[in-house]
Image (cartoon, rainbow, N blue to C red; front, top):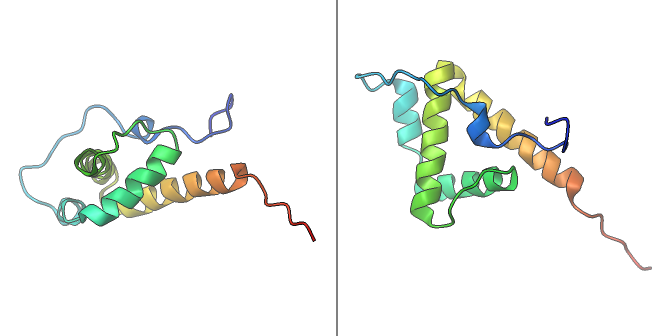
Length: 106
């Protein structure tokens, strides 16, 4: 969490800047690159809610999410799914806590 705003850091701050991309297609990269458009859109909406600056075109959302997931796979190997899930869960929890509560008149 960010001390000043109590919001999770944007996704782009969660990955390193110098990663070696393997010449061989690993199982982890195959899994990431096989992520379908409708899945990347949902992930992009979540990351955007967490502060990531992602254009709204489907192609831009897909590119952003695939880049984010590739970086996680290169940094964490088999642990990339857990890191991605943790980040998404963190954002959703923060959004849920920040949402106004419904007042029932009754």
